[in-house]
Length: 575
Image (cartoon, rainbow, N blue to C red):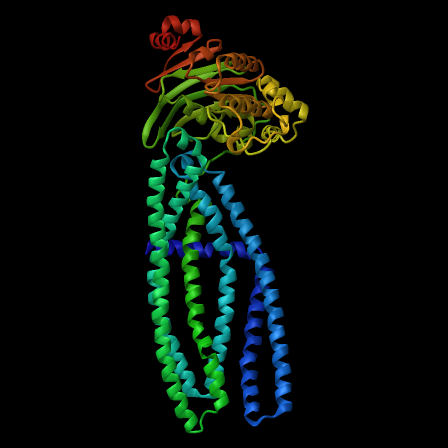
């Protein structure tokens, strides 16, 4: 019951997207009513035409034929205008739906992406928004059909009251069967959509991770899992389609019986001179179209049922019903020195406490390293600084300003992060860098690439800076990706730059170069380096050593070699 209330409310929330285009909506409705009204004239004049054929009045036949031709041409014109208008409306609503979902997705806390397969978001962004944008199209189309057929029933009641009542009884009984059909259809359709969503997620994993799948020989594992999901998805799809078609066959069989009864009743009225043959023919010819009234009503109910599911899934993201949203303050940093302070910071991940009362300070324009064994939360500290994750309690200060009070621009523009596995977009090298600073000149791009020690590699490529790198920089080596990511961070001109294992894929020669670059950046930037290889941070101005999710030691490299046994042991093992 709660589910039904929730999805119905979501469907009503969809109306606000159509209210933005009131004139288009009104025009679609007017054209739909106009189509219904004009289309009703067609069977009326066809009945008259048949009547004149009985007496063979050629003048009247030609006159009615011309009128019928005009009516049908007008119907085509109105239908074309309706189609153009509704397509324009669909396009605008579809854009707005996708735009709002993208804005919500980009405002998610990172843990939402950590815990959810990206294919689920892609499926909702692509399929659900398209279905919702077409909903008004289907409903107005079917609604005009309903109006047309109701009008025809009234027309039949004037021709013969008993035939009209018979059609109404037929419609009521058929509608009852269609209601039963819808109950089973909704249930099987929902199962199919859930299975299909999970399958799209697996497809996404396979395509994006195809290199790892091949390198680790995971082909059979992935194919077995995906094939099992495909069987479940196809089976659920077959079941929901079969449910709908089977019920349709039963309903059609029921209608065939009523057709037989209709003929018997009509014969009785004709033999008693209470029904003309021409009236019988026109009612008989249009009777099945009138019964399509049930199809229109059923289709509206089916589309609304699908729309409720899609709307619930859409607003689940847009309204952050089951997902957490990034929260920012309203304060703006006009100038930034780059001082950072953690004060009694507590943070949990997956209900497991990672940090409890964590505290330390980082001075501006210094290079600070955070080291320790794997799993201590080194990278998490960087994500807390750039607000990818939200702390549970405590405070993080940037230049004595509480991080939670700063607006998004102040945080994201002034803090850059170079990750261990940076994502390189399927653009040219130049565009990959310029996207971080659209105002950057070609000279600026070359300058930062020289700083990041990747300029020579780029110049050796056939198209140099105009080279397209493929999905996630497929043509680049791991070290080249990291150096390109460093150049991208430098072009952004952020005051605080975070390096998360940013030299892990470099060979010793390039590692030494990048190490010197990072150190030189600390003249004008606050640099925080998370490193697994301690040799990359021996020249840091300060090193924090994490153990058991606490800072147990800090100081220069030489100081820690003397005062911290765990640090010294890690360094000696590495050497």
